[in-house]
Amino acid sequence: MNTEIYLDILRRARDVTRRKSPEKCRTNSWFLRHGIAAVHRSFWVKDFLAKYNVTKMEHPPYSPNLAPANFYLSPRLKSALKGRRFCDATDIKNATEELKRLSQNDFQENFQHVYGRQQEFIFAQDDSFDGIVV
Image 1 (cartoon, rainbow, N blue to C red):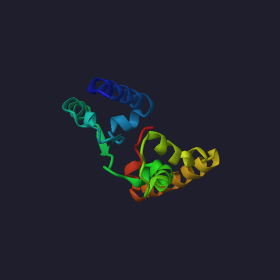
Image 2: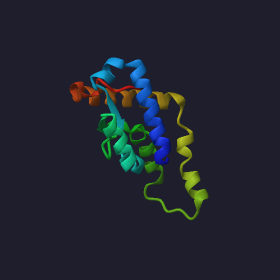
Image 3: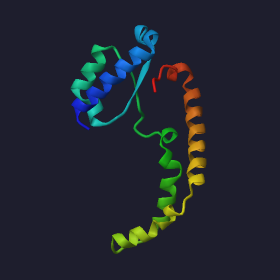
Image 4: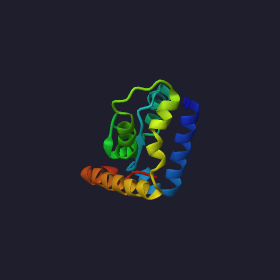
């Protein structure tokens, strides 16, 4: 994503926030959950956030509390590939067939677990997450 696109997204998010939560905008009591991508650290994005006095909450470089794939898909993929050597892409594809056997119910259970972990993370941060605009 380039900086211009991201700035447009920020402008639209700011407009939506002003429209849906005018009091939070007036008191600057809302937060922007900000990622660690290069575009998020660009001069123009930092300038925009400073200009509009946007309080940003940095996303940790690695947060198992917020990464659903770390709980479910990655461990299964790793176990299917662990200790094996592959001659070509077909061998790797065959080794990952286990992922195709996962049911919708398996995914739903995983996301319920992740949701619970996210709630624990949010409550552990006290009221610092109260202003997140979704």
